[in-house]
Length: 284
Image 1 (tube, rainbow, N blue to C red):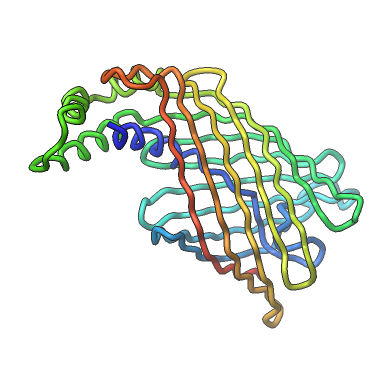
Image 2 (cartoon, rainbow, N blue to C red):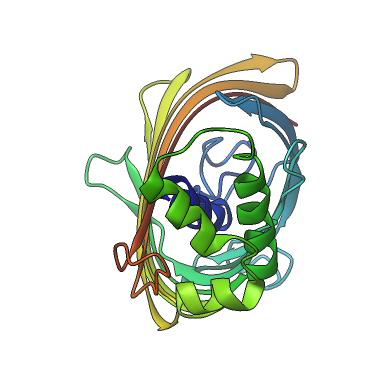
């Protein structure tokens, strides 16, 4: 039964994955500064072998007649194994900060976020912080989750299980999308969250990026989430372009409360995911 619960929770985790809005390099801001508009292409892989392809870039001063600085950035990500897709669009204006939208499409759920970000520089003149407040709408695909549960249950055929586990399996045998909706307490959620993205350049070559996210839903399914990320990057100049190599560690913890468990278990689902990735980024 623990595996079935983890499948539901981790299925939602797949759609609730956050990372800092990192754009490409130009001459005015750091490579990992979210306001960077240079065009880029990249590839990364995690410890599970999932390959991520990244492409994007942006434009400076699309409006305002150069009286003030603005940056508009677009980033697309495609995951080759899961076939998940993510698209982010941000606009920064030196007069009031930045706004962005983030669309994350997965099998288990689609995640739509809008937020406001305020760029800040620490008193040391080097460390940069980008705190943001966000609203997210989570559209949970309960039919897809039910399909995954039934496939996993079918995988137990022919294997010996204990009496308690068999009882739990029988309780979920042939579960439908409507039943998963009842279990979760809804097929969508409205979430409010805060996020802190930070950048510490150590010198012209090495830099560290950190991010901490926390959110809780106030409508629909009762979802709480924490997401932490730490990235160590190295950059080098190759001709007129910049080449980045980075190592990223990420931890996600999600809890779904007020769960109606048909097996009589706990009234919540909790899932955790830890990833380590290595990536390469070409910025031009």
